[in-house]
Length: 330
Image (cartoon, rainbow, N blue to C red; front, side, top):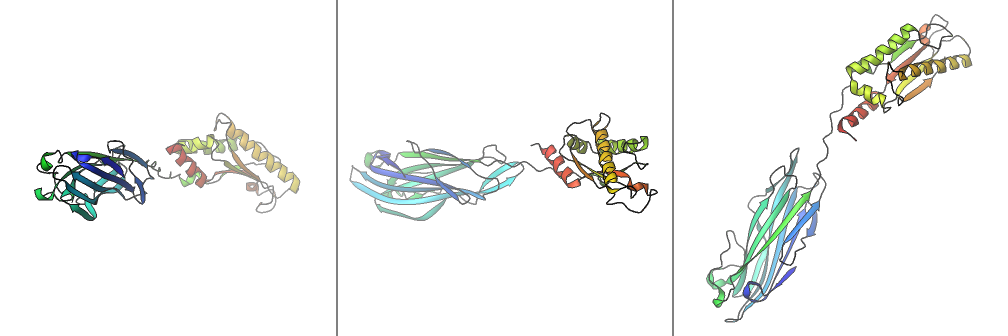
């Protein structure tokens, strides 16, 4: 507690101490030589529902004129409810404030009384705060002064025995809150289902490992559809944040080794085209490549030409996450 010797022009001392609570976290105000305090407290967003300031006062006083004495103690507390919104933090007094804490105790004809003025920041303030300005003075019970917290402005009547005993002392306690508002999460992008369907790129002949004009046109159409319908998807693909899935298949004719080699080359052919200037035009493109050979071929014989294909596809979940991060910024 802060000790103030010979307050109010009287012998003795006045002690005042104060703490603040942000939710369940309690800390003491560190008062300067004048008994004022200006604290800053960091807290997580929406981690607390209230803020309070509690004050304790103790005194031992002697008026040398008439040798009047008095000692006692009392306490009081102010409470603000905290609410959070997109506009910031709002601090509102919880009913009539402040309120007494415990029971006031006094002995002698000199008593100490206090009056507290409260203030708080406006809703949405960049630096939300609560403040209590306390006026404390000493008087005599004979003048109608009562120990403890006064409901209205402090009035101590006549000076005690001709001294300046009714002089008031003022203390200011201010608490500023630093609670960083989290960034608003962008709504998950809704990628059209048609852009997530696998696009088959066909290779007509058994030994073909380069794209025909028709296959090139189909691959170009797939890329153009992504660019036109969802530019953000095109952007994260070009940045290499969303791999293009490339799966190559072969027909049932030919040996296992031969077909594996063919599917490897077909997959590489598709990847080269996708990197070119007419497509994604990016050296950062990432691929998730699988070459199946004829392991997943359906049907028998060369007539099943659909087995000779490369499928390109985008993972919808990965694309959604990457676009969301692109929107809010990293």
